[in-house]
Every structure is written in structure tokens, then in C-alpha cells.
Image 1 (cartoon, each protein chain N blue to C red):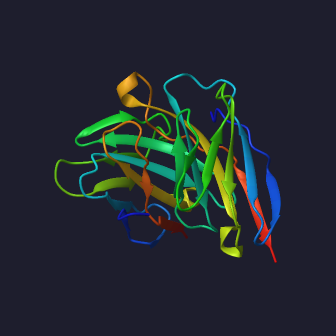
Image 2 (tube, rainbow over the protein chains, first blue to last red):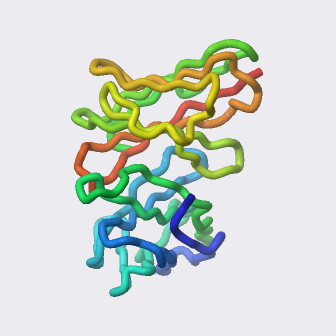
Length: 114
Length: 114
């Protein structure tokens, strides 16, 4: 079962920042937070992941709260092509005694409109 | 989707036939995961394999489904005696052994059973 909770849908205006929240209150110390998205029926696309520090790459920023019980994915300037289902996933690390598979929940359906 | 190749992209089978889905992971990746996505539903984990080993098959149906990842060659998901309910998109992902590294997905095989 998925260990995260996300809103089922969100809207965002093109050019504005999209902030997608995720609750993972039962996360353990060796588990990472991963974000993926699925555009239409394509294969899921990796976006970003983090353990405890905030992370940024060319696609997005990931803000993890200090207690690690929630996080926010930020798309700084959303475009129409960012319309997709976004999945927040908690994933253990094999080398710290956790488990390595990704379990997808229902995700958040983000609609970016003109 | 950095280099995970799935083939065929589309597969049509008649009820009772066998379906073989192939997945070539990113070069150097030794872990492979298979997921199934029924129409209008989320991604469901099926099986997690390392080279020559099945690590977790908790999501595999008990009958007709099998998976392998041989020492040489692609990973194969095999569905025997297909039924209409097997019609779905099947996605493969691969990752290196390091536990905190992202997994990359292929574009999937869309199986239609007629």
C-alpha cells in the first residue's frame, strides 16, 4: 500500500508556480521521498528525490519539512506540457535495510491551463 | 526515460495465446521492476528482479504470469493463456543496485487481448 497522501487534483495557470503537497507521516529514517509524473499514458518520468534536505534540479524543487512528515514539489513556471499525474512515493534504501521497490498511489492530477 | 527499451510497444493476442513482453534495462542496471496499469487505473507493482533472481513477486497473479531476468539478455514477462482482463499497459523500470538512485521507466507495452 502507498504510504503517502496527495490531493486527487489541482489546477494551475500557465506560467505560475505549481505547488504539489504530499503527506508521508509514517516515513522512517532511511526512506527517501521520490516524485514521478505520468503524462497521458506514457511511462512514468522521474522528477526528483530527497532524504531530508531540500533539492533542486532543472525540472523542479523538492521541499521536505524538518520532521520529514510532508513535502512539496514545486514546478516554478508551469507549462501546458506539465499537465500530468504526479506521484509522491516513499522508497526505502536497500543498503540501509529498507526496500527498493516503488509503490504508486493515486497521485495528483495536475491540470495546467492557459 | 533514459534508455529502458520495451518491446513490442503494442501486442495483440487472442484469448488463450501466450504473451511475451521484453524489457532491456539501462546499461549497467541490474535491477528490473514490472508494473501493470489497467485502463483508467494506477500503476500496480508486479515483480522485482535482479539478475537471475526474483526478489519480490508479491504483485504477480498466482497463475499464468511469470518473469525472469537472465544473466544475459532482456527481462521477460510472460503471460500464458491470456484473458481479456490481461489487457493493460505493462511498464518496466530499471535501476542500479545503489539504493537511493532513481529508477527509469520504459514507454510500456500495450497488450490487447481480443
